[in-house]
Image (cartoon, rainbow, N blue to C red):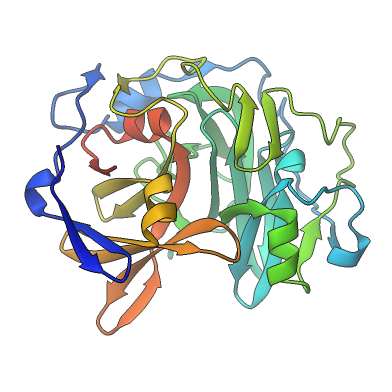
Length: 322
C-alpha cells in the first residue's frame, strides 16, 4: 500500500518508497520498458489499411456561435497554444484520428486514438523538418501507429517516438490538450475556434463506432469496461483496464496518476527524475492539468489522459499514484 502524507490545502504527496511499479504480466524484460524493436515487432493490422482512416489535412474552423452540431455534454479536446484557442470535437476525431493543423504559423498535428483514450499534439523537434502524419492501418499496444509523409518513419501515438524508418529514435515535441465538454470549453473560452464537420469526407459525425460519451466523463460500450481488443506487450490488474490515468513523462521516467484522485484532492504532487510536478484540477473545465517546476516557475509538463492498460503497456516501469 502507498503511504499518503496530507500536506494541507488539498495537496497530496507520497513518500518515495511508495514509488514502485504496479504488479505486472509482461512480455518485455523485467524492469524495462519495451524497446523500439519490440514495439515494431508487436505492430498488428487494425482493420482499415494505410490511410483507410483519413487524416484531416485542410482543417476548417468555425466560431463558437456557428456551432450547431455539438451538445453541451459532448467531449472536446481543448488546445491553448501560441496565443490561439481551439476545440477539436471527439465526434469528429473519432473518424479521422489525425488533424494536420497550423497554429500561430507553426505546423502542429493533433492526434486521437479512441482505443486508448489518448489525445496529444505534436510538433517536429529542433533540427527535424516539419512533418505531416497519416494512419498506417496498424496498431501497437492497441494504440494508433502513425507514419510521417516526409520520411515514412512510423510512430506510436502514445509515445511520439519513431520506432522505424529514417527518424527511428526521434521523439516529437508534445503540446498537451485537455478533455472537457463543449459547454465548459465555450464558457471558459467564448472566442474559441472549433474544428468543423466540413472535412471533405462522408462520415456519420455524431455516431461513434466504439461506444458513447453521452455526458462526458460518463462512458459506454468499449470505452467503459472490458479488455483491450488488440494484444499488448505488458498488462497489470492494479487498475481496471479502461480506468483513466494522467500519464506524465519527465525525461525517461514516467508517472501515472489516477484522474479521480486529482479530482478529489484538488492537487497531487510528486517528484519524477528529480523534478517536482503538480497535477491540478481545473474546476472550470472539470479536468486535470499537470505542471513541472522550472526554477521559480511552473510550466506545462508532458502529460496526457490515457486508459490504464495503454499507459502501462508502453510504460510497465511507471510510478503510480492511486
